Image (cartoon, rainbow, N blue to C red; front, side, top):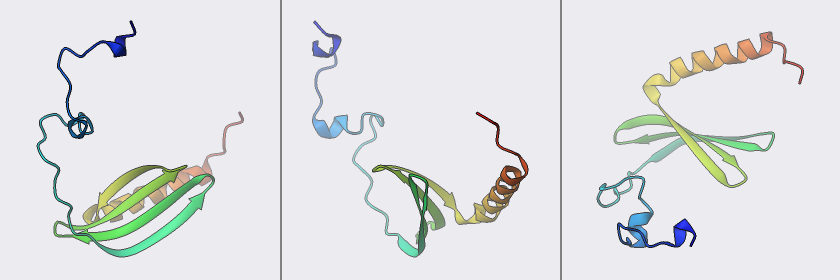
Length: 105
């Protein structure tokens, strides 16, 4: 018998509970928060698409950066108070990349 064919000692849960098994005992899903989009931009770099969206909700403004690679999406959210510091670090990384020659493979 293959291990995933054995019945679970914990019983079975409805599909809706399994979908959130990474958040045990979290209760019902949170209601959506109203977000206003202030500005969006999209850039294609090699096989990746990046979508940058400046948004605002009742908690404040934030930048949502979404990476889409073949339909798989990952998102990073940066609160607006940290955008200037984020930009400074990004500028440093761009400068370091330009100054450092790539290693031969």
